Length: 310
Length: 277
Image (cartoon, rainbow over all chains, first blue to last red; front, side):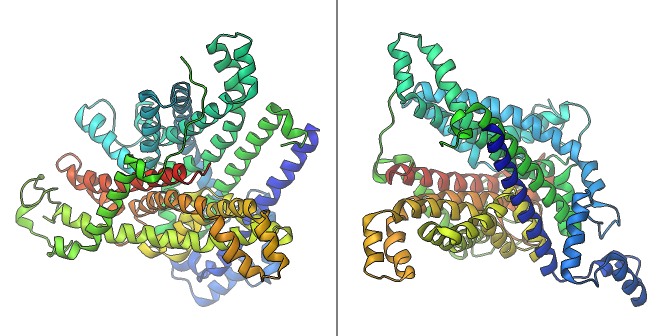
């Protein structure tokens, strides 16, 4: 059964990925501008040269042929060539990836652990000052632009107290502020979700049964409630990975870090569309894979799903 | 002691926090709308004899590197930022609502087709999708608004669809179908009014989302040209003077944060008042 569930989910993910990739192809076709011209514009090439380059790039081929070649290039990991630098987009992305990944994973760890703790705190004392404090903090967290919280963090911890560097990268000290800022932005939605799920699960009959059997409250909470609440929370945390990728772009800009965000922003300002498309398609791929992994883990955790009951 | 009950619902008028948030939104809108009265000199009036003045009488929130009044720029900037937010929300609702309602009401292959398209858009992380659309349209505030609106539309379509799914099984929809109402009439007259509650609440939440992400794009320099009063751009502009004049950057950021917060709080309040899950 689990194999069938996994298979169905896998086919679904592949289909969505194909649609997303196709959408990116269509969008590229709709924009004015000639890639051959763009590639040679810097060197001021003659018209014959541009025509030769067009043929080389296959831009004179019929659209279906271009589309098939685009798909087979993608399948082989070829994301095209930057108009500005003439370099393979895939390599440019791989160069910037470690920096962004480092930031995103550190922020994920901070955001999920803070959100989990806060959400639990709020859920076990609903409608008390503690719950109010948690829900308020959560809504502030998800309403605060990382650009602003980043600037406040720099003002306080770098310029004010002089504890941490405000920009650049290198050692771990450079990672602390960006990761805290991005992690804080993530923690609010995680806390809300965990709180809502835990409160909901607490109303379920099996929790009442566990209480009726005289199990201690902490045991009911941490063993029975948390296990039931966390499985669905996993999918939503995976959905937040998309937020994390976007948030990383802004955070990188605030703290003058290298990374995919800087690559994408510069590409947009220079109208270097293959790079923009490469970063976006890459982001979609990562996002789809993370969500697929979360759903597969969920299917393994929750027997109802793989039996097709829920 | 752990409490095991489910919280109750409250009408909006009994929620002081949501009312305060609504008041802030009204105030921000009023300030932006009356900017020409409140700051008649305009957002670009420079005076190099009074650069980097800290907040004080005459310039309540200080002046920037050209001696421009930060408060005046925030008031005028509200026009760009709030206008961008409203335009983006209109795009999100205008595209997402019909798609979701039609998919949810009619089901079948229409539903499958539309929702696969929505899924494909949702496969892109929101801000990255908006960035890609700005890349295609070319930088600018209205491009940012459209981009963020399109990026927000699939989520709105999802919510509209699930609201329509709940309504379409009701007997009155079946009755309308039985007496021969056109599909168009069923969607507009029967499904939409009865599915409105969650859609209104979600629209407020989405206003927060589009403002947050729109300002992120303008902060990155993808919006108006440098110097234009706009909260995200002002936040970015002031970064160079954080040590000497932190007010240039922090006050526009505060205005933005409070507005996003207010939109989210109104959304939460509506959800609680309208009994939306």
